[in-house]
Image 1 (cartoon, rainbow, N blue to C red):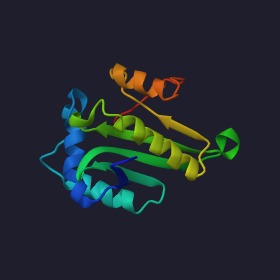
Image 2 (cartoon, rainbow, N blue to C red):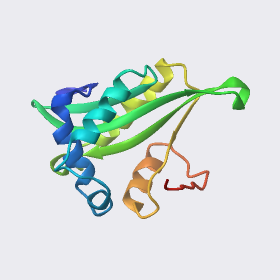
Image 3 (cartoon, one colour):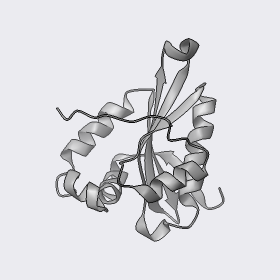
Length: 150
């Protein structure tokens, strides 16, 4: 991966992660970079769960991307373990650099290493550029997703 390091996120990374999460029209409505307390609490919960992997991509000492990889053991598909990739963000300065491809390839490789037979992800219906990106990497838009806000 050359000068790219992918490592677990730390407390010091939270401001950069939240800034990336908020840096688009959808995220701007959902995220609150002015109050990091809920994000720090979430990092604590994630850090104690061995099936949760919140990681950052670091280039030249700067957080350039983030994603969360969740490993889920299951009964369906003959007891298959699957992973879910969520919260994928690449810093605006890094878009188009190939970082996104390297990052998703890392997540797929890590999923294999964790014994997963399937990798899943969702992408907001309005993110058509992201859909093309994931399809280019071999993902198939095979399901319709549903959410219920609580």
